[in-house]
Figure 1 (tube, helix red, strand yellow):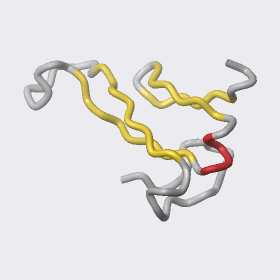
Figure 2: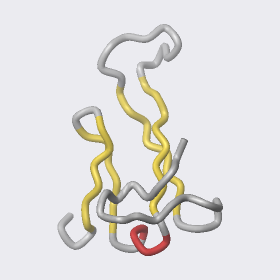
Figure 3: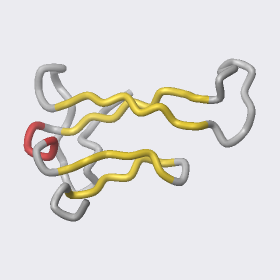
Figure 4: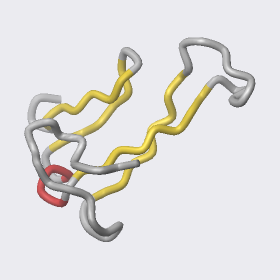
Length: 72
């Protein structure tokens, strides 16, 4: 369940779908799982309206990584 903004420096809490951006990232599974035969699983993250303008999200090293767009 998405509870707050994916940016660790932000304290915004998720309330409505029309606020910010809800993202689906397909992650490659590290260990085989019969429930996911193609070895990918969706991971859902949310960025608040302010952070969605300046943050990009990627799945790296088995977890979600956030990066400022200026730094990318």
